[in-house]
Length: 97
Image (cartoon, rainbow, N blue to C red; front, top):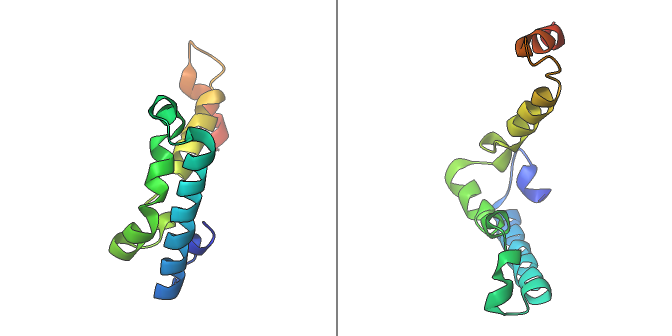
């Protein structure tokens, strides 16, 4: 993952990261799913998406340029700070100042 968060990534690093991602995915599946269809629910879509990050990096650039998890985290944190149901944006406006 660290390889894929760099500003500049060489083709060799991308190939290496793809190999590591495939290895992780295979080992996770072997350990937690045990190649059984009734345990496939352990393989979440986000784990499958990890396989595509190196290839998407070639297509659209480093993952930090298009990922949304940082803004989603911030929205969740700010949503937790809404303490007054009658005036939900008051606390957020105070936070923004």
